Image 1 (cartoon, rainbow, N blue to C red):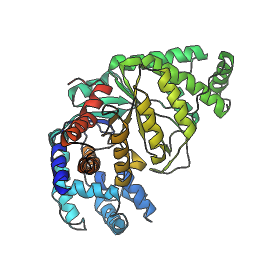
Image 2: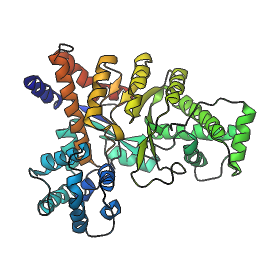
Image 3: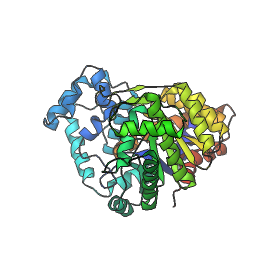
Image 4: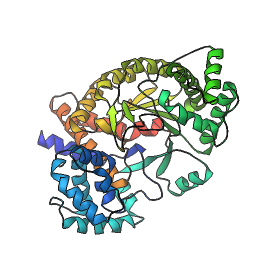
Length: 428
């Protein structure tokens, strides 16, 4: 097993990759100090859960004081997969072999400050060490000025997250429709404006779109009159029911998909609830829970079948949705799965999901890498975690005779690189 595992791990290190979902800032994607690594919201929430005051970590207090406070709770979170990523980052990128402590963090921080001011560091880290050819970066708008920034950094591409679907997301969706002005006077005009705005984003350069789909979203076809009444009441500031909100969300979702058609990729994010606009306003920073509705899977299957020309890419963080969505991707040619997000970014979940996808899906129906990272150092940590899991699963498949080494290499190239390149329309 060890020999096969080592060989596969070495092969994976040479395979090019595309990160289909990140939050990197194309202008400054690297960490500026050690706080950008230690106080990442995944780890910050674990720190809070262990009894710490996570607000201290991001307060205006001196960095030394914040790191000292972090270290006081570190023993409680050193066992987590999130902290495994931190160890990997600090060891591989900054040479820290021993445990982080009250003295050596300063040396590491000096090195991070150096790379934080080095314009060549992101390329060294992403392109050379991880072999990532392109990284999609989430943005909530896309205009000519922002597109110029991406043109100056051709290895980064925009991924537009401007609206989502579900009762709790309706305000954000309508904010996009407003575009800084009042809502159109009727539903038909609002749908037309929405379509024009999406079309404008595509003309500017958007090829990849991302939308959360809430667990309480439901396809809600209704008559023109009922939809118009719901829209009119909403635009007047009146309260409307969840069913009416879903009816409006259904209309705008269909217009969105009609507009995108076969010219772009649409990512859906499923299985998580977090604070967003009027949705879960009582949640704290980084607070999120698994939220699942199995009815949603059936409704989305209808959406996927209703828009066969759209390339759908589904990212979910609830293990309980795994089999359902794997089978959807197995049944429908325009649906693929993406990576391991948020509450599923743990090796036990990742390895089970990889094994399931290897056994159930054609090689072109899923993508491994969507780091969701906010700096390129965390991109490194998460990518290494996922690729480590992939190597172990593939090695077991080879040992058991399910795959030959060449099959494993072919599959790795598909799921790390080719599938994202084809689905997202990446020109290289």
